[in-house]
Image (tube, rainbow over all chains, first blue to last red; front, top):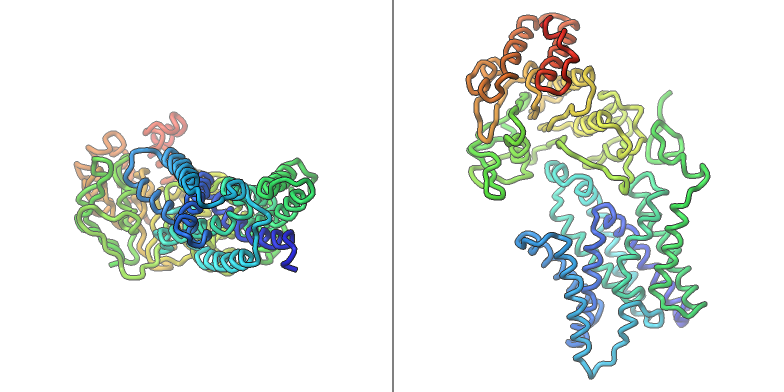
Length: 283
Length: 268
């Protein structure tokens, strides 16, 4: 089954989407979209360094992303520039340095478009192993820190006061984002990873009454987008990454369309028997 | 001792937010911090909760202290789907029965499945308080817990805080800029203005010169009202209502609701 490149891409892509959904929810809740963008742009620097040092690309990209996010933490504490300026600076500086380093390495033949926009043909059985193995680890760690991270997302001070240790959860979360970027780079490309994190999560918001529901729905919407996008990519010979993002966008647009009462009852002000998260109300 | 601050201060962007604060809070006692805006009340509370670490002096907590915190500001934006019931379980486990009880205490049991982002200001504060109580804390810190709560509700919530203190025997640190209602319910008042101006029982503080100079016009009726309540402590429900009217009058004197309750002040 893994002989077929399309099947490999679908299996790999769905693996990425299942992880990107829940992680993307936190990115939306915490307003970290630009942070995700910065990390994914820095992935190209990781690619250049991996080729230069002849190391595994996924691992080097992961390490570079973690270093960039730590660097960002340090700069935020010291520098006088605002956070968004710092993020913009790091995002494009790392992307540019990566491109320049790649250009210097005349001895390596690089499919730059594949790294920027994803390459459906590049997904090997080994990559699928990395995506699913890494993905399971990311989800397991996310589940482990979920309560602390979520409490810190709602209110940092409250989480600290009540013993949730949000600083630890925050740092672990940054490492998880770096891991998602590293494993999803091949499929969607560095320029579009953030879209895979954000768009399914944004699509899920309308259909969710609880954070956990939103995480699950985002994962499912992401999986659907990957499948639709890759079908389209095959059908019309379009690049894999952009096609997946376009499919996700279509899902999002459909989700914000005015809909009949179907979903209207999901966020009741008063008691409503359809909510599964709560017990039976006594009459 | 649950929490103690020893000559503690916090320094941020070239100035001391608060400095030289020494205090300790025991189980079962209600300590109220009062003071003008920017006097360091929230900063002091955050040191007591180990959210901020003092740049000078020391802050100590009982090991593994179970604290509950009602912060002054908490926003839940629309991107975060969060029902009241889910919010109650933010930092602890709770059965649906426990959640129902906690909400019932604050009169919000009908909101169990509502989205946090759609609550009114008063409802939101009540839910915050319900969540804090649900954790059965040893140390309860309330930063302006009645903001946005209507007047009768305010009296009821202060009463509830007193009940909780008795039931759980927890230490309570209460922050308020609202001088008068709070003072009758509290064991000790600490008056802050960048440092501790004065502290002691409500009666001591109310009659101290520092308090009068700090709060100026407000302090005079505060003293009078306090003595009045003290005289009539033994009265049943009617007394509580009276306190309420007086408090509203005090509010109007500080410019919040001009002219609405002047008549009551004459009665007081």
